[in-house]
Image 1 (cartoon, rainbow, N blue to C red):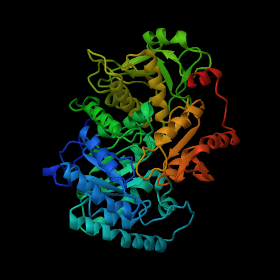
Image 2: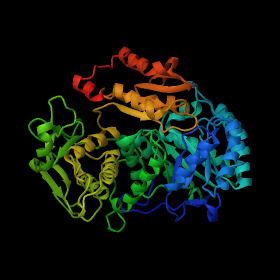
Image 3: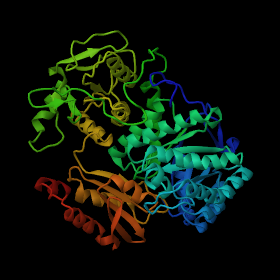
Length: 595
């Protein structure tokens, strides 16, 4: 199977055009040779017409090209007519996308008024109760027939009215039917989407895009690669555009890093026609990150250098960390083998941060680059290594982007029958003027995150961030976001929408203030149940909106406590963490800082 023309040389995947609205009057075309479309989502109640209109105008003002609005009920969907009418009255014709979960009737109503409808195959006329059931082929076929009967009317209406559609599967909301046959897997996500696409195609409807979203960047990357490979196998007329996004990425630096890893990796391989960066922040912030991220892709992907077409060192469809021997970096730190991915710094960074490091600190340099016995290689040339216990890296100023260079290095080592540990660098050359911190963060996250998701890398070196302490912190945050290391609490937080039953930004800040000192604990903060239980499958604890002002608490994907008053919910979450033996009291100085 093949998901891109070459993992070493950028070729944008050629897709058909999907028309959303009237391109001559505010609409957009997704796919083809058109630029990647930036989109975001409203956070207010869909029944609040005034707020919905204002948030839409605010998004358009910062460059948003598609605006998504949730429509959880038929009543909400009907109010889209008023929102769109008011926008048009104000001269705003940005295409509106209705976000539908659970209710086909809401989708049918919404399609009357908006330019695009997003449906989630996992819960559109399907069930998600985490029930374990063995389906015979006959039972499975019967379920598919039932789904086709529910989905076909929407397909026909969208075709009649010229509406677009997104068939968007989420890792957290696969149906019981898919889960029981394919498991909670990238294959299950792909097959779920293809079932609905087949129904659309049987009705000669093709104005749709796919998405495969997960809160785990590695899973997300695998899903999209597998999807595109399956589409390629199905034939050239399956060239539908792709919507990219890491769902529930969170806020701040962590949310940006997760999104950069997932979205950036795929963009560098030529995949992706529209993107959304999901942040637990005000929606306009998402567009700024979209723009900054898209601006980095041309220099992070190989657009011109000729590279030998060598077999990859990894399976792009199933993560497996590259197997290497264990070696010593210095007297106290080892890397490779079963060791965690290590953090290396330059001598200049060491001199600045070392005096400030305390014995109990988790964020600290583990080796100094200039002190290492590291063999610097130009992977575009032939090279020899005497043994595979030699640490290797790519030589600076090689005429390749870092992602391409390190993939080529790993592939050539494999061809030589060698498994040397590899030190990753986020950049191989530097601009005359230092990158802004926000740009350095995105670039380092795309480069190192992509390679870690490929299974490549035993130690990392971040040099693009000029601030010594910030570069050290960034290295650890990239490792955490890529699922390679856990040095702090990990949060899976949805970005808020009209379905959200509490203020996500406020509550997330409140939960973080109480729990951010916990190491190796993963907490999911979900505004509603649409993706909550599923996305919490690999979280330790979950805080989920169950009803207005009521919270349900989960352990994994199992609900444990129901209808807790919101005012008490954070305390009860702490109690739950304590009951399961994962609570530790914060250090006194941490309490002092927080107060």
